[in-house]
Picture (cartoon, rainbow, N blue to C red):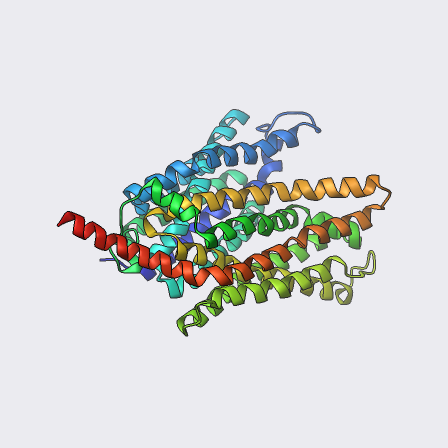
Length: 438
């Protein structure tokens, strides 16, 4: 018997754990270097260390669509289990590594699982949660990913790196197996309560021609570039612009990051509430409101006239609250992006379509830091001082969110029709299949 709520709860734990495993490298990479596992001179080892992230992600992205298609064809439960166990085993193996080649091989297996499972999990949430409750489902997923980052950073800092990887690897396996058992009976399209058609690439192409989906995928580029920049360069920005030590700059980022989890949950629950009241555009309205407020707060934080070098609480509190508000309100949109996409895509091709979404999402996060660095370099070459160049570059990149607001306004015009079409199309196809079979 299917137990959707239990399955979702265990899924959230699994997501938290494998994201914790993903972020373990940040606090442990110097320990690996100290043990001689990452070779090279002082100027070279960081390149080799970076490849422990870059190569696994690249290989994972290359294989991602294969796992997504398989999930749509044969079922999502089994693929989630298989990829989760691959992550669990690879992290356990990392704890036994004796040289760089072994590290890279084990991390690559983990990257294949981590990147490959993401679109399948997006689709699985839609199998578990009906349309009017998907905001909460995706909010739980995104909140778990943020909390997983915090957990990974904490565990990596508190225990030996080998024990950290072994512990998280075992924990992932212990979560994956109960999820497989608890999700028995949750088939593709389970929450729709309709008979689902068969996977075909024709249906994938039909979905990609949907206007709402096309807009959402396009806006994802503008949406993720600022996030990629903020994730990598926030601490450096605060240290340089405000003159703060690394510990206080990191504290600002930690507080802001924690607020992201709150934003996911609030944004998802508010939009679900509006949808249940019959407001079809509830997700659009909440997303626009959140991005508008969050963008204004983020720009205010970036341009805040901070008393350079001051470490007093009275100086630190206002911009810290602005940073937290900027990230919290902006992330109102994140669970609604996934919810809207799931509403306009047929259940039997959701994993495959979400693989395209995940590819764009990963690309935006990856190129954001590069664009920021290039802008800073260009502005400084034109004669601007470093602090001013950082400000103009950061505000310019964050302003890409204005394009996201425009995209959500456009979605408000297409989503009601496409949402109905997706449901009517699935029902019509079921009827046509029944007639053909008879």
